[in-house]
Image 1 (cartoon, rainbow, N blue to C red):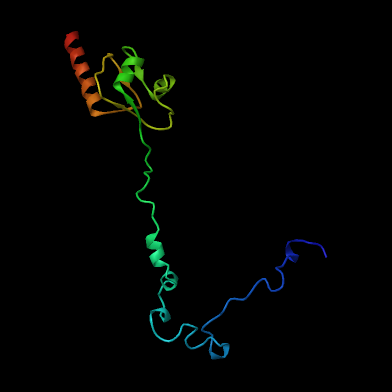
Image 2 (image 1 turned 90 degrees about the vertical axis):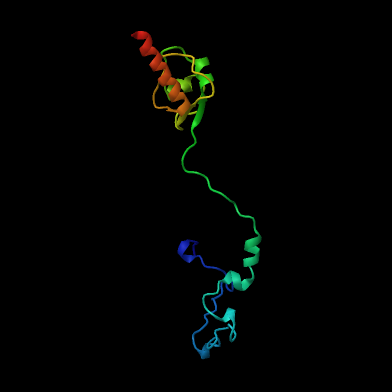
Length: 150
C-alpha cells in the first residue's frame, strides 16, 4: 500500500471522541449533564474562564495601553533649515526638500514650522503644509513687497 493523502490516518488510540453530555440518562451523562445540581457553575452563561478561576489571572496581566494613530505623522522642517538651504525666489516642494536631505521620504506629509524668521524672499511652498506663524511671515513679506513696488 502506497502512502498518499487519502491513506494517512492517526495511530490507534491517538484520537478520542469528545464527551457528549445531555443526551439522555442511558448515556450516563443525562439529567444534570455532569454539572452537579445547583449553583453558578451549573447554570448556562457562565464563562469557562470564570469557572476555571482564570478571571483573576486575566485581570493581573499587564495590558498594552493606548493606541497607535492611523494618520501618518508629518516630517518637520524648520525655517532655519530653509534659510540655510534655499535662496530668494525658491519653490519649496517635497522633492526639493528630499534632494537637500531635509526630509527622509516623499511618502509622508511635510510641514514647515516657524521658530525663527524667514530671511529669504519670494518663497513659494507647494504640496507642503505650513504653520500659522510661517503663514503670517509670508503675508507680511507680500505686504512689504506690494508697498515697495508702488
